[in-house]
Every structure is written in structure tokens, then in C-alpha cells.
Amino acid sequence: MDAKIIGIIAIAALVAIGGAAFALAGPSSDNDDSVSGGSAESRSTDTTIDTGEETITDITPEIQSGEYPFTIVSESGTCECEITETSEGYTITFSEINEEGTTYSISGTLNGNIVIEAGDYDFELVLNGITITTSSEVPIYIGSGEDVTIIAKKNTVNTIYDNRSEVSDDDISASVYSACDLKIKGNGKLVIVSTNNNGIHSKDDLSVKNLTLYVTAVDNCLKGNDSVTITSGNITLNATSGDAIKTTSTDLSSTGKQRGTVTINSDDGDTVLTIKSYCDGIDAAFDAVIEETSGTVSVDIIAGTGATSTASVVTGAPQGSGGQGGPGGWGGMPGGDSWMQGGGNSEGNRNVTSYSCKGIKASNSIQIKSGTVQIDAYDDALHANSEDTMESGVRPTGNIIISGGKVTLNSMDDGAHADGALQITGGTVSVTGSYEALEGYTITISGGNVSLISTDDGVNALGGGLKLSGGYLYVYAGGDGLDTNYSSISFDGTDVVIVSISGGNSAIDSDYSYTYSSGTILAICPNGMIQEITGSNAFKSYGTQKSMGSLSKGTVVTASVNGTLMAAVEMPSSMSNAVAFYIGSNSASITTGSANLDDNGVYIRS
Image 1 (cartoon, rainbow, N blue to C red):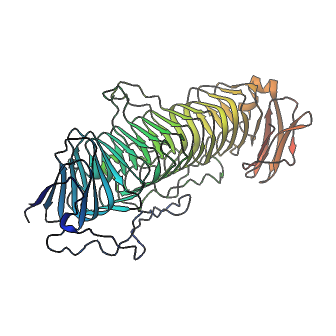
Image 2: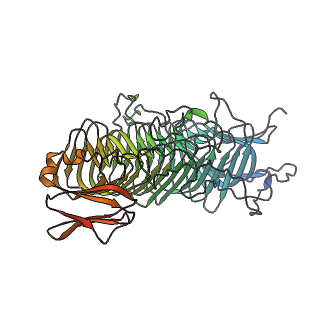
Image 3: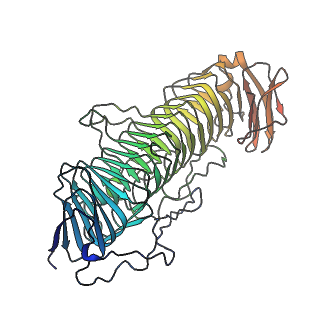
């Protein structure tokens, strides 16, 4: 029927519209609105998504004459509140806001939508236990405002069901859309379930803190064109056909700030972020930054839903990690602007898709400074581009910098790929499965504890060289352990243990040889390309070689200098015609024996 205005209410005090508030009943049964992943198993073998919904007995209340199923309360300030009846239910419009600090709350049940026109002022909408359901309009639409904040009140559960059909690119597909800066916060719970469209989208900056937030959407769960910032909270994002977190702008703000960054920190308390995405977990138009500041940060991403590498069992020469099937089962082709984002374009993943399924992707740089990060990706787990100049004129670096934290990566392609420089200066970095574990134009490891498993090269520097100047590095590779193209390797202090099991590859493969100044290096590979190791002047001055014959899985190979055990490694698989190399002394004793080994099966004398 035609819409009609039910009332225009200037609310300056506590007002219960219609005189009644609708109370939600408690959970009556388990919710089974879940989606299964693809044919490949995830790291947890469970790709079922948790939408965060709490089933209620009845969301269609009986409405007596003159009563609404929701209650609106003025917490501070005044505005015009217009309630319009539609064929679906009601549209609530907040407008004519002419002072700062205007706050309204809503509770109960709304079949319909909310519109906010705050002009040039700030506005806060408190969700005080509200269920919003719509099949025709954007559930919450913010057309104007300086800063608009949506607050989930403490001890409340608030749910938005966006049941609209898929909308066109010209329409607004988000369940919560803002044309201005949008802040989502509170100490309550907010659940958004979008059947065919997106979750939360701000045309400008989007920030999230404190609350428990669940977003299940077809494409982007959280999208801020200019930035997305998470500073605390327990956030679960399920993007069933697209990217979970996304930014798009790369120009400068009016204050000269570069746009397009995704920031995850703990400025306002502990942050727990869980992502399951059909495409990229995080797609940053500029930088992606993860850092523990005031509290702890935990980021857990499965990108490509159920895809998991098989590289934890390296069986021979380069073979890729294919054979497990694609990320099917979560929806057909990816939706919205996630289509055709470039894919893996790699020789590694034989099931490469025409769209991107990376854990964290950034068009400039990825910076992990601290926190716990765990990624399981069908494509690269970390990927930094340097292709397109930003709208600001900035040339992207394509750098990945890991300076702290605990980072665990599992990929059916590269563990970490940097078009520019890949730098590890601290923290614990574990690539538990990959085609190539670390790949970058230049690679530097100057600190930290790094362990890598790959079906092809463990470390691959694409042209700018590999510098190892501190920390610890363990490589278990089906291809070359360390590989540099058109460049050299510098051993300047990193303790390195390499097991490379393919006869067509070498533990150390450097086009322009390598240099050695310090550090303990123990390498084992089949007798095939050992001249890549022994042909260097550094090896002639500082190296020891010994043929080991056949080594069975579990055998411990040791290297000692002047009777002191310097390094040891337990063979992760059997090897025929094995040759062991020690770099650090040309009089080392290499044999089999025993040692006190770490979790990688490695001993390095400290």
C-alpha cells in the first residue's frame, strides 16, 4: 500500500512510542543457518560458519491498535523522528538535527528500516535490544552526518536481517550504509546477516571497537572506502562470496593523510578477529597494519574457505599443492567488486582461480608488528603488490615487514609474497605449508625465529638478493632451500638449517654465488646439484662436506667443531644419496647421533 506518515515526533525526553516496548524472548532452539565450505579441509577441518544468531521465539509481535513493536528513547539532544508506515512495516527517519551530542536509542522489533540524516552534526544511535528485518530497503541508511556512531548497548543482543534480493551496482547493497564516517562500538552484541548483499559499508572511514560483532554477508563484511580500523572487540566475519574486509580509496584526505589503510590494533582493549572468506580475508587499497598496542591482538583468517596446503608432507620435486579442489560450496562466483581480482597467477597452486583468495592483500605494504596472526589461504597467505600508482601519486612499495608477534601461515601457494622487499626483523614466523614459503624481490631476515615448509623453494629472492644477518631459519623444502635469481646470498649472522629433498634442486642455489661472514649453517640435500653449494669461494674457505648415503626419516644429523656440537637436525623424511654441508668451519665433523632438539627437530648452539 502507499506509504503514509504515522507521526512526526520531536522527542526531548523518554518516550515509549505507542506506549509499549517489545521484549525479545530467550533462545528456544539451536540455530542451523550455517554454510559448509568446499571440498578441501580447513586447518580445523571445520568450515561451518558461526553467524552469531540467537534464535528467538517470535519476531512478529502482536500489535494492538495505536502501538508500535519498538520503543524510541531520547538519550540526549533533540531531533525530528518521523515514522512512516510501508507495505513491509515501518521506516524510522531521524533528521533536523541541529546540535552536537544528539543520541537516541531503539529497542524491540522493527520490520522495516532506519534512515539517519544528521546534516553537519554528530549523531549516535543506541541499539538497545533491537531486531531489524527488511526485504526491500537498506536496514540502516545514513545519508549525512559529520560522525555517526552506532552503539550496541551493554548486555543486549541486536540483530539485523537483510533479506533483500541481490541489488545492482547502482544501488546500495550494504545492510548498514553510511555516506559519512561511521563508528561501530559498544559493550553489547550486534549480529548482521545479509542473505544476498554486503554487511557494513562506510563511504569514508569505518571504525570498530569494544563490541561483539558478527557479520555474515555475500561480499564485503566490513568496507570503508577510505579506511577500516579495528581497535578492540570480538569480531567474526563470514564473507560467503567475497572479501571480508576491504578499502578502495588511494587518494589523500583533506589533511594530507593517505587513504586506503586497514588497521587492526588494541588501542581500546583486546582484539579478537576471526575471518572466513570465499575471496580475500583482508584487501587493503594501501597498507594493512597489525599491532598490539594497549591490549592483545589475535587474527585468525581462512581465505578460500576450506583450502589447506598439503605441504606439511613434502614428497619430492616441485609438485604444487593442487588436487584438493577449489573453494566451492560457499556460493557461485564471488560477488560484487571481488570478481576477477587477479587470482594467484602462480605456477604453484594448480587449482588457481580467476579471483583472489589471499589471506591479507595490500596494494602497498603489509606490516605485522606484534600480536598473534594465523592464516590458512587458498592463494598467498600474505601478498603485497607494487603494480599501480596510487591516486595520491605515491608509488607502492610492495613490501612485507614482520617485526614481531607470532605469525603462522598455511597456503596452497606462497606463504608470503612481496613484489618489493620482504623483511623479517623479529617475532616467530612459521609457514606450515606452502608452494614457496617466502618470495620477494629482495628478502632480509635479521631477527626472529623462522621455520618454513614448502613443496618447492623455501626462500626465493626474485632479483634483489637474500641477506641473512640475524635470528634463526629452518627450511624443509621440496625444491631449493634458498634460491636467488640474478642475485646473491649473504650469510651474515643468521643460524640456518636446511633440508632440501629433491635431487633436481639444491639446499643453496644462488645465481651469483654467496658470501659468508658469520652464523651457523647446516644443509642437507641429495647429490645432484651440490656444485651450487661447493662452487662458492665462501664454501672453500669455511665449508665442510660429507656424503651420508641413505638417511631414513628420524635420523639425526649432527655437525661439531673441535668437539663442540654446533648444529643438528632430525630428518623429516628419508633421503637417498644424501650429502650434508656445514658452513662456518672447513674442519667440522658431520655424522649421525642425537641432540636436544626443538619443535622443528633442530638444534643450534646458542
